[in-house]
Image (cartoon, rainbow, N blue to C red; front, side, top):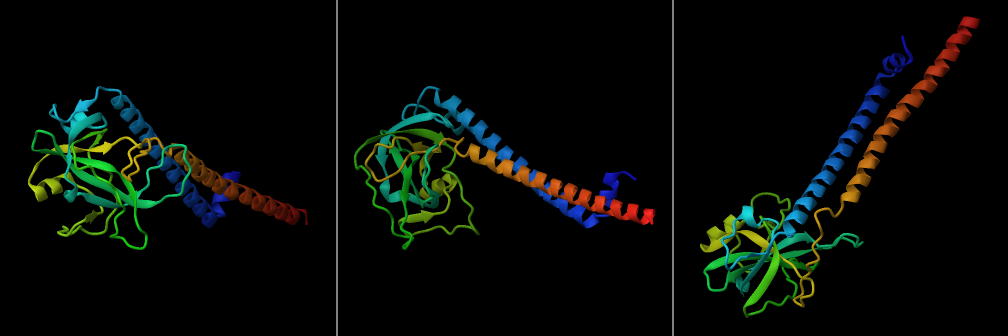
Length: 261
């Protein structure tokens, strides 16, 4: 019987425990690497589409396939009474900026395109929430005149986990967990574009934050977590091996002493 067979045969519980630790560490490490790779691919896709010509929502027929991750400009007036506040959204923090997470709202507001009856939903930005009063909305300003919006097209503003099914709110202001274009189209019975625009420009004095991070933001953190999980797996194996070798050596010394007598 070789030494490794002996370590496994005489230490079943320790071997199974080590296998569990190694399995968890390797699985979690691989998952962190896959998340990092996914973010890198998203960043590359976004970067390649952002350099394409700017689309005009007023003059072009935009589809989600055409406009996703593309720069878009639109001219129209905000329908501020139909705004939707998405809660539990983290403050946008650009890459390289260290700051603690802060919960707040994304402000979704429909833009009635000038000279048309079509509506384009705009993610105007992030605003902080009052931790003592959930329904107290932050002060923001909305122009009553025609505005020009520049931003990037997306399928949705991002989803968060919610328990159960949301009840349609009849009261205003509307505070929601998630935003669905199909739900808004059914609710308002209006003609709307099949995408949302995440507004750009952080120099506007409207009380909203638009320092949107890149998709690759946090990739280094995933690599660091992957290293920690793989290190845990390696430590589990080394502990099992070294402790087993020490036990094996002691047993060999005992057996040798018995043979000497």
